[in-house]
Image (cartoon, rainbow over all chains, first blue to last red; front, side):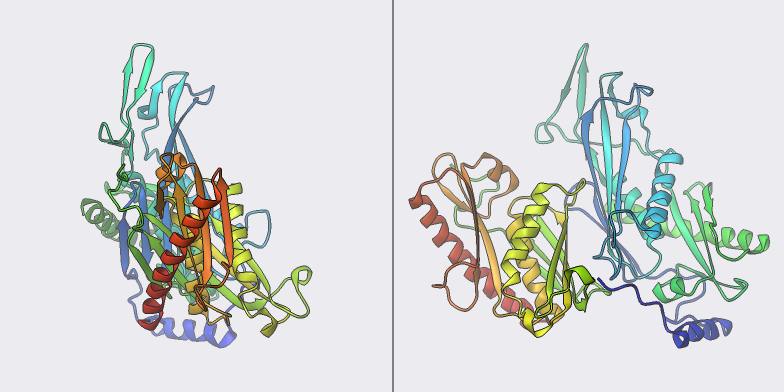
Length: 274
Length: 217
């Protein structure tokens, strides 16, 4: 398994030089997303997102389990996120998760779990006895830069696309209906959070681009992600490590992100209707 | 007794494949048989780790990830099915001390995953330009409780079947011995022979499909 080869110094210099003239390597505008394609189905809760060449597949499934003892009336949400050797050469080189895998999976987990996108109380079947455990598996198929945005769109779209079996509670017993007898029902999703990621390039992070492609991501000196929903509410901000950035840059990026998040959410809504 | 999706006993589900979708791999193929869909990405020949380097041939490594949940022994079995089928088929002596890494991702699993994995790998290896002795295709069939033999069983049919058989044949000659055989459950030799013939016939159709797909690339 070959180690990931970093970009050559000529490539890195070219990216910077072009950006200083306001030009991106793939000809996009500084704040343009790559072509976004969201395919839902055929299975329920299955969504594949293509953001440029980056591809992520999300699968949502559920099963009946006992609730956590300290939360007897809430369902459980589990995440499985593997950035394996399919997505890029040199990944998956050990039993422990790589730093990149951990950071992407923590990000997606955060936006779904901590922003309370899923109503976990609605997943309760019988308090203290039976609840739904909803599992979201994210598979990275192709790493061509900006996995987080693609993964976030895939995860929330898959959750909205998914249908769980219908349940009737009759006193002490809960009857879980076969999807063939009764139509499965959607999960209770409060809002649709999406991530908008920026990369900062140059020694002081003075050049900013939205939705970095692979080469831009490999030469970035800082990264910043805003998580927003359709109500223009900021769910999370993430700037971890990298060079220090101006507060003004951050607030400008957040403004751009509001418009971009709307675009992403409209694309998700359109894809789910079809 | 009719099948849940109203297919004929010998009828397989609709085949579909897309080659070269992925941008980072050397070759990739997505193969679907009805609602069973797998994506295979191949890197190779690339640098091998020291401990798996072989002095006279390439090392073949297979990784399969399921669509839902963590990998289980079922997925390990599918990995070994693919590895056993292709270890001798890849002309590994042409690339000594290198690694050919086959990555499989189950997108949707609805019966016949092992066979679909072999088919996806076959196409991905061709897309990657890895030298092969022959093209290989696999098919799966099940013997139902009523004794009927059905081709390309769904997950539901496989669960209720008395035995399941997966065969992989190479393209050089239909009279050759199969490259891979996996039969499990309880069955008579007569049933086995019928399954063998049914799968051999199905594999020929799959090979023809693969040829059209590759020529149309």
